[in-house]
Length: 131
Image 1 (cartoon, rainbow, N blue to C red):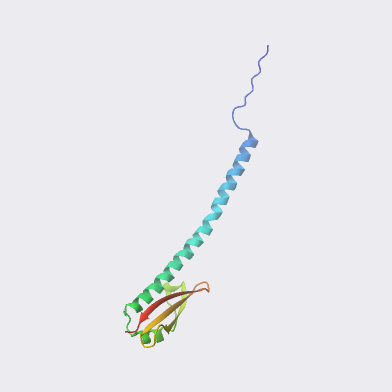
Image 2 (image 1 turned 180 degrees about the vertical axis):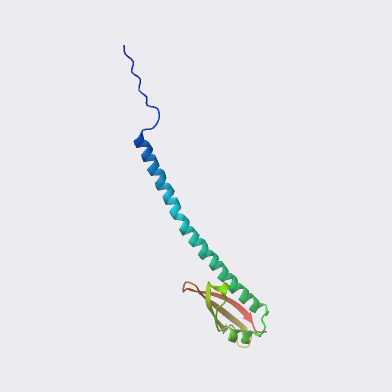
């Protein structure tokens, strides 16, 4: 009786190449997600900054923390172009006010529209009294 031993331990070259192709495909697809995630993070950060600008302006108006009275502030900020270097994400803003409720109560709805860097406009609204 003759005994033959077969060495079946380990991988063949073909199995190794197939494993490397599968691994490379997985790594490539994961790496392609990084630029998308970075862009989404950048847009989210810029939108958070625009919200902060709107909240700051409308909060100062609500608290009567402006240099002028309510009506003067609305007239001065009706259309405002942003040419500051740190405001590259907001091109301009538009302010409108409308009286709300009974005449003579002094309650106004103030809307601040921010024109964003990508051409969209986002609107923020608050209610203010002129007294």
